[in-house]
Image (cartoon, rainbow, N blue to C red; front, side, top):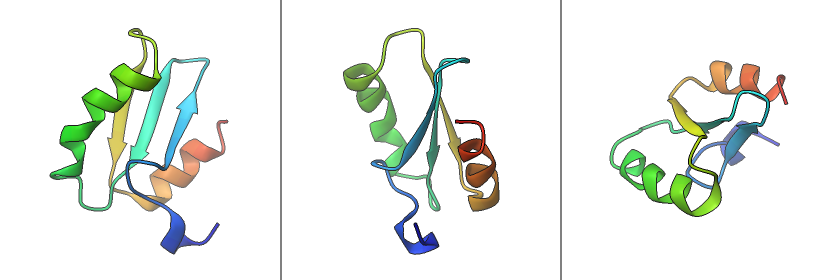
Length: 65
């Protein structure tokens, strides 16, 4: 995966052990407004979302999967 393919609401990391979903959004607003609906549709209620605008931080989360 190249850096150009990373980001957006369709690219996220699910950390099942801690019940978190990490989204990488280079420019979070207004895309971040869609995250509650995505979380409600795709994940159980006890999962929480994390948004990062740092590509390096996002890649660190990938290493946890």
